Length: 364
Image 1 (cartoon, rainbow, N blue to C red):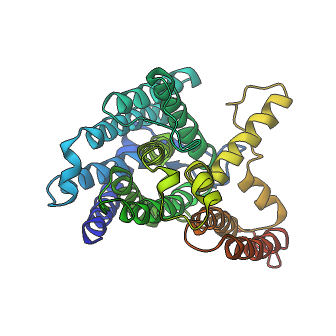
Image 2: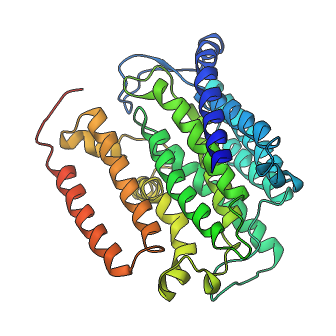
């Protein structure tokens, strides 16, 4: 655990320090978000925060490669592949932050980044369906790239309020870290040092280092460079872990149902809010006869603002829902199902009450 803490702190410190420099760079290259009809910020704000997070992640990879236990992970090229994929997608996102790329170019960049990771071994090897199901390699590579595309776009869709995307991803990464770390302890022989756990630890650090600059009122936005990077790192952890645990032999699960469903449902649960927001946006825009990627002002965070919540309270509520879903899913592995169900039901009731009854209205 100490080495993971060092990775988290390294990513956080380097991200925090680099953010100040990246903010200045954003003004120089013109990566500044103007005030648009769909936005909630009141003044033009620089973006490119994803470049600082990439620096933090790269520093964590460099430090990890020198550690006695985590250094063993570098005997395979997986983490190098993740770093290369992260670099590709961040540079593509940074270019979009400066020049506004078309949707097809951005999709191509996401596919290339996913393909690079798959080439370096970060790909699905099997699916936890009916025990372990191995599909033809082209199918698994295609599914790997699809997960990257869905995850990156889901995070990008929810990046609409100060601190929202970074906070939601931090919560999701925390839940996934808990799952991967505790499941790895149950391996035979036990081994808590895994690629997925390393990625989530570094990802948590990147989010923590960036959030002080991004809390409302934000001094810097993460931009597409940041949203796509966070989505890619979450997908890399999911891909690395999914299929590496045999549900039938998982001693972490307290029931056969949890053992069968958790490896499939947890990756969805940790990104439930971003995926829901993306799905609703696609349906909403398609029904209106516009392209699914055409921006609008009807995301979940926009709806919370319309209900009467302040900016910070809307962000806090989405944090609450994200934590509820992610941690609730993880709880099925370690406590009896009825305990999890009751706890989740109570938490959902409280969260729903707080969501739909904004007693204190504030214009901020």
